[in-house]
Length: 332
Image: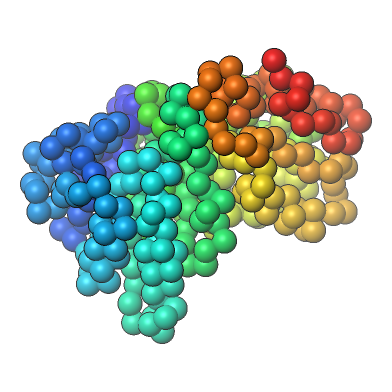
């Protein structure tokens, strides 16, 4: 049993994969000598050397393209994008090249590539460094997308991603980097495409991902809610959610990203179609408003619902079986 912060769990996951497989390499800006801007690769350069832990220029398109080529030749690159917002300048390499290569080559090439990095609001990094990038990625066939919610899930998702034969993006909510957890790395059982039910409940199913999982769990202490941590946004574990909604009759999503194009929109459509006969109320989505992330702290707090906001929305849903107003319009 070890007590680790999430950033330390990420370091250990990469160290364990580097030790287990000589084809694994790490690339990115400041991942080597500096140990990562958020210290998520601390000590790897000293342990594995500059051939396997490579500092790159500030050129995301260039080094992500190099990683795609390296993966096609048999290596397993782990590429850090310091702020996931910066993925925008290299999106072509990921969604047009890496995600499609297996299809374009009729299976002759695979791209066992991991792209990982920090994302999300809550720490005052403002509009260009705080975005939820999931909507950019979820419509890309051939690409898996996962979101860590704790030290143990960050460890498990990253190791599973490295071993996957196709490209995987692992999103790390940077507000969770300092969080602690006691866990045994050898007992972590996290698989891509499989969600976790963290709490049983009867009245409502609450589905969350990343930083909103802790919010959902805190809110569930005040109602009979079943809480599911999705972990993987693509492919999504719809069976686990369907089974839960079949028991509770209601679905609430708690999302850190914007309302437009959020992962909850696709989930709501699937549940509305697949569980229509058992739903007692419309699907309720709690999301960020569709605005750039503000720098001002009071406004930034309104980008992600707090536990009290989730409780108020769930109580209104249970009381009326109809949708309440948008949560941020009532938040203080």
